[in-house]
Image (cartoon, rainbow, N blue to C red; front, side, top):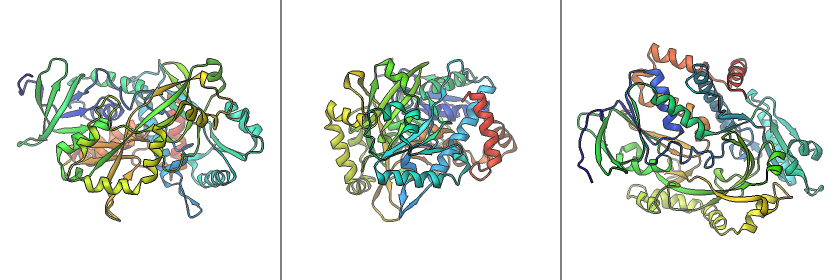
Length: 498
């Protein structure tokens, strides 16, 4: 191993750890806002977007809460819509940023990364039908869901999703909602486009096969990172004013090494996934929708079953799943020691408490791990009754790490499903933990991070002007301003071709 040393060019303004959609989004935002920033990106694998951002590791749903039923829980007979509205608004913000980049010719649509695919929620059984109708009615109060259709008519549903209705028991109560405005996003292709733009700019460098081994506060301010070149074997020290840990499942171990007070007490619970991928072109061609159903009791949100049209590298694909599983790895390309090594004295009580509160999840994951190919086919047949195993192939999906944190209300620990930004009080470091709907709401998440970590810059006239140029609705509520929402949606959809 080479000696640790400070070398020229290793004192950037910003270090981004992980070459996924989050780092790419933050890097492009920062460089647009302040072109003279120097940025270094470090990725442990040999290519960008190889983990959670990759098309085959990611559901690819432009998460707008149109079809994801877990974002609209029913409590005491009332459908809660606040989370769905927030996610729908966040995706519209993300679309504006993408449209700005396309208009500026910073990224290209020559190989589209976003496609129009209707989003459908589908349920069966009288109780579920009643729930879906109530959900539909509740969402009608928000203009972000204008255009949503509801039907219990089997003939109408067969027109929307023929594979799902073919061969189904005609006596089974069924219902669905459809949003034609739904999208499919290839986050892998988008991430690579963003990094191509970013690295074309002055003072930005990408380093693949580089593993961040440690980081600590520098005495003179900022952070010192020890980084190993996995090919050459050398270890170097890089000093940065600001560090973003956007390493997916690898973020938690690095946050623990940073040892900031705000990061203490966090834990992670890894959930792996698998897809069934259709290999029959004739079947793929018959389906044109993302059909989401209700999750099993105890299932994490990333395991909500869906029969899913995808556009990947210009070709139409059809997936079903994901089937959840358990692995102690925090990354698909990680180590089985990831989970054990993440357990520290500061989070062990929180993790045990969260585990005891989530026995149904543990039971669910054990059942998923024990599944046979016949079990997987049985689950598929609930969404595609005529399915045969000969037309499907099992594929390994991405690894997700759900956030475990202190329960400030009741004590102990709580398992969070979603994304969590953890940042130091001085704004010098931030980490992104968690999973879905992360990628689809990346721009909103990064705007929140800028508010926390660049307080001295974000309210300057220069940054405010640029933010409004990139995101026309910046600083305004799309959920409460129907006219503004319609204007920006019409503009971004036209530019993106969706």
